[in-house]
Length: 82
Image (cartoon, rainbow, N blue to C red):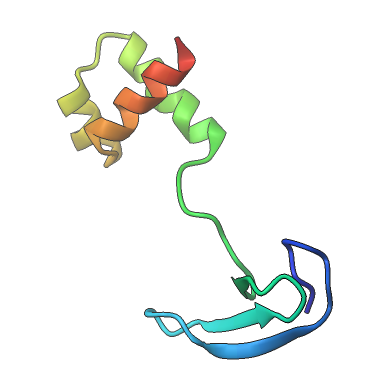
């Protein structure tokens, strides 16, 4: 296993996360990491799809019901895109 922060291979086991996944710690940069890490959030394609629906006059509350995304997320995406 290799640290994706600094690239070092000096990685040791360091307990488990709350949801039971193995946690590791890099001996060089002292940062913790997980094996097979998948970032949280929405893909760019999904964001574009939701923003397109918003531009076609769908309300924020409607987007919450249809796509299961929070109104705050859509609001922050709109602010970033302007």
